[in-house]
Each structure stands twice: as structure tokens, then as C-alpha cells.
Length: 406
View 1 (cartoon, helix red, strand yellow):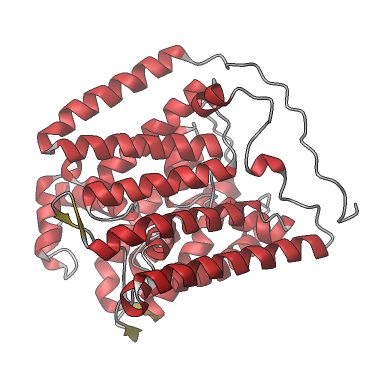
View 2 (cartoon, one colour):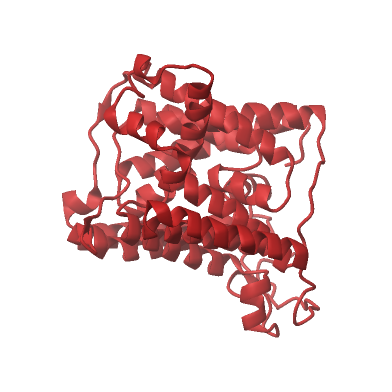
């Protein structure tokens, strides 16, 4: 196919409104209402953050917004659309975050970005996470929204993700490797220069990807449905019932992360919730958290004592799953899928563990370290994605050895 071939909209016959699965919708809406009321015991913010989690889950599902799949498509199919959506999401979030982080407070409470040390521990953890998300066929948020969509295999990924992150918390003190202190480009260079620098880097990466896509034998992958799925569709119904374009998903995720920052004072994260769930279960079986340096810290002991419903990350994780189920039911597509084989079971179990363990070493996952970290102008976010991409390449090769489809 010629690189100069014209790009046209592909006709997509659609009904104005899909046949929604009303019984499932009724159950999920009831759970959302009950959850919002019950969580209000911990303050109004907890109920609002639960709702934001639901909107994140719906956005991820409707846009089919992936991280692991985006990198796999990039390296295997030379499809740049997923990574371009990431750049759009990061650029939007950077612009939204900067004024709030520069102010340092909002609505009477302190605001802090996702900033962490930069070093070998960070890089090794992100590399392991990159391998894990290819074997596990998902990332941290991807595990949640695909479970919401009905994927049974991702329940196995979630199980070992929790175990891996808990194991990482128990051994993190052993990884005493050289590192630099947390570096925020906004605080180091000034917020305006930092934003301009990051936006320039995003633009240069996008141009390089576009040029690479057009000069290889790959079919041009950036089509008009990156912005809008179909010019003839009913936009109002499409927002409610899906599907969304990748650009719409990118803008929605950036906006919701910014909203979470304003309300809670910290950007969006996912992994801590998994770690806390595993620790709560271990405590129920007699484990003593005071015996471990990570968990013996006052804030960690307080989290265990208060429980998962008092924890913001846990509550938002629950919301993501419910939001994805709601979106799937609105689209009439919710169905439990159990397509499992022995190689796939091995891959998802090992992949989940590597993601969990790697995230604890790297001070976050694809959300907390990569998305929120870079949006906060943290240098550790840039190191995270560089190492995770290398890990993804290794993970794709391992998928081939296990004869899993790439």
C-alpha cells in the first residue's frame, strides 16, 4: 500500500442506541448508590472519589484505552495510535496539573504531585513491570477495567498482582541501590519552562513516530477515528453507550486525574490498593506488620487499622471495576469470558506477580509512576517509561515462547 494513500472514514453501520443489559445496569447503579452512601461515613470526598473511579472505569472501557496493548501494537504491528493517545493524555494532564501544583494547595488542603526517587531500583522495578504487563495482557488500571468487562483471566492477574505487590513491600528495604532524590522539573526549572519542555518532548516524539510510521512498510495507523469514531454517529448516544475514540479517552483520563488531584491532594494511583488488600488478608491470618520495616511506619499501620474502605486508592479501584461493568452493560456487551489455556494461565499468573513486585520497587505502576509521575513533571516517571518499554520488548518475546498471540 502506498504511504500516500488517502485516508477515508470507514462506514460503520450503527444503531442510534444499543440494547443495554438492564438487569446488570440496575444492580451496578444500586451498588454505586449504596457505596456512595456508605462511604460518606468517611467524608464526602470518599464518596466523590468512588464516583470518579467509576467514571475512570467507564472511560477506560468505552475507549478501550490500553497501555500493554499499545506498546505491543507499537513493537509488533508498528501501530502508533495507542502511544499517540498516551502523549495526548500526558500533555493534557501536564497543562492541567501545573497551575495546581505550582499553587501547592486547593480548597483548603495541600496539593502534592507524584514525585519519587530516581535510581536503579526505579528502573529495575519498571523493567519487571514492563515484562509483567505483556505476560499478564494488561496493566494496573487495565486489569481492573477488563475484569469489569468480564475477563476471567484478569482475575488471576489481579490475584498475583496483589501477592507480588505485597511481596515487594516486604522486601523493598533490601533494594538499597544508588539513587537520586526526587526531582520535579517544575520545582527545578520553574513551572512554565517545565511545561513547555514536556510539551515539546511530547510533540517531538509524536513527529518521530509519525515519520517512522510513514517511512516503514506499515499501513498508516493514524486515521480519523482516532479523534471521533464515526462522523455520522449520534454524539450524545456515543458518549453514553460507546465506543469512544482514543483521543476522547485520553482527554477524559487526564481530566479525571486532575479532578482527583484537586479533591484528594494527590494524583491517581492504583497499586497501593492491591498492596493493602493483600496485607489486610495476611493480617487476618496472623501476620504481624510491625515486624517489617515498610509496614511498621505510622502511616502504613494506620492504613491497616482503618481498613480498605477508608483508603482512597482501594475505593477508586472498586469504582473502576463497577464503572467498567456499567459501561459494558450500557453497550450491551457485558459477558464473562473464560478463554484460558495452560500457557495463558502461566503467563497471567507470572505477569501479575511481576507487575505487583515491579510496581513496589519502581514507586508506582503505569498510572502512579508513568501517568501521574510525568504529569507531575517528575523525572522518575520518564525513567519509568523508558525501562518499562525495554521490559515490554522482553515480555513480547516471552509471549512468543509461550505461543501466545501478539
